[in-house]
Amino acid sequence: MITSGMKTSNTYEWATPQQLFDELDKEFNFTLDPCCTKDNAKCRIYYTKEQDGLSHNWNGHRVFMNSPYGRHISNWLCKAFEAKAMVVCLVPARTDTRWWHDYCMKANEIRFVKGRLYFNDGEGRAPFPSAVIIFKGKMRCTKETQNKLVVNSMIVNRKPVNVQ
Ligand SMILES: C[S@@+](CC[C@H](N)C(=O)[O-])C[C@H]1O[C@@H](n2cnc3c(N)ncnc32)[C@H](O)[C@@H]1O
Image 1 (cartoon, rainbow, N blue to C red):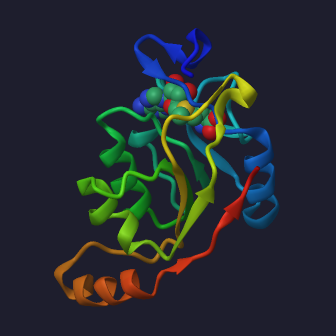
Image 2 (cartoon, rainbow, N blue to C red; image 1 turned 45 degrees about the horizontal axis):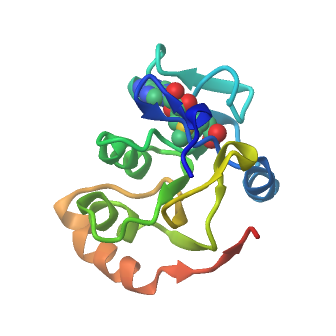
């Protein structure tokens, strides 16, 4: 169910369930949330829509990214893929999309979430499955690395995440 609390100015907020964030934070010790509001920021250092997280340099950070779920999601995955940073992304598991194949399939690791998440801490169950995509900051989208990336995508570790 999508509730009014999830929708702000025609964009869905889909704030990360705190429990899932805490579990990942224990493992990755995040330093930057590049897309959030002041209220749903997950890290001390963060960027809001007004600051535009896409236009900032993420290099050297350990980034937790649950990006806006609209049609610009591809730009966020591209940024995560190319950043010289560890970037852990919570995304809808839309395995038929171009951005999934262009970026997620080339990630260091993909973890599929078992069951559906309750975003905004319990306001409503997501109508889509989710996945955690992990980029370790060494990926470059050049012709030279394309072959290697294809091999990586075949051996990607599909470790499940248990959230409920
Ligand atoms: C799916 S929510 C995730 C919020 C929070 N990071 C979390 O994990 O709970 C995406 C957030 O990105 C914000 N946002 C939208 N466009 C942005 C932009 N260009 N730069 C930074 N944040 C943006 C939205 O306001 C929204 O709060």
